[in-house]
Image 1: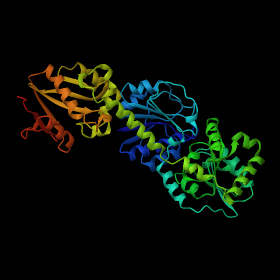
Image 2 (image 1 turned 90 degrees about the vertical axis):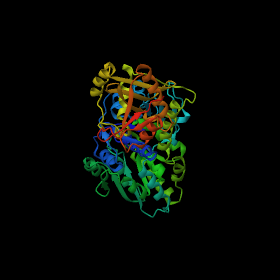
Image 3 (image 1 turned 60 degrees about the vertical axis):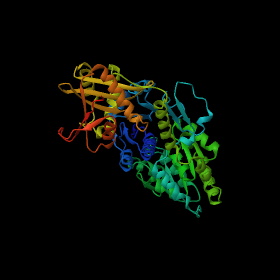
Length: 494
């Protein structure tokens, strides 16, 4: 299946959504699927993360039905707070699955699969909104492949701190609140710390130095941040996505709730004992002496062997994204697997337009099509209207029970001769439906055009289609030439 992950990343809004998106894309590709990110990616660090992950970023139209159809997506995974309740109807209009990432009440919307990886989310009530599968709790926290690699490296490290601890500060990939300077000043004032490194955008460096002095090391955000974090004695972090990455790696962390939507996760992390905290950013700024004392106490405990990192490492095992992908697979499979339902073809209707466009634009389908370029929404709409009205074309949608699983198309190519083509719904692959879909389409067409010859043009390298049509009674006609395609003719059943 093809997965499109809808999220944005900017200096103003941060890159936490994109970090999770990369993690989920990693898991989808590991499971054998394809994935792209759709949205406005304006942060340099975010673009760097995409390049490192080998992920393409595409434009995101406002209507998710258009996005799914143009990208050929079986799954639209939304990880932003702006998309509204209309998302589910839009995605279902073209037969795709909507997956939605939420953080408590932030980003909450009905979906086929809902994910809330907030710590203790499973202990709170969530209003019933028709969502099909709801995955809640820290076990679903998505982790990038780089996090899992850092976790392995950290596991072999001897946890000993010398007289001068090495502390790393990261207040989000963009430090949109200017918290890095505040926290750097706190750590610079604390006893027992020998080296302070601060990750912040270069445009913030002057402000950091103004608060913390010239002794702190300033580093630009980069994907190599995890290597620095894994080697640190203590990391002071915003209580967002990075906090869970540090927990997964096994790095002792002190958290700061720099924005309000981090408050619930911050409090849960402290209650669970997987991190310690300095409070909210406003609290740190209003009482810096208390924050200094908390940093000194944390370093003293670590030096005495009283680390809290092992607790968090156990609770955040790094497999959250894989669990999300498995939920997609199971939900789509359940839709298809109506074992006793008949497979029946019906004439395509106007409302099937985006469904058929989505199937046509699936990357695997395009590879074996006569024209491999993706079809645009505007181009398809006009073509589809003409196709339904064309007497030389018969177009069928094949359903198993109530679920569309494929389409069979017949085009008149000569006197009493029609060419057949079949497209299986990407999510229906692997369910043994190719032959039933073709047979259903042939039966429906035969009722309308009983006295015609049916041929199929198939690329020689498309072995699955070659086998499908051969088993359905089609034979290669070596005298026929159709460019790069083999021409197979259906034998007369009599």
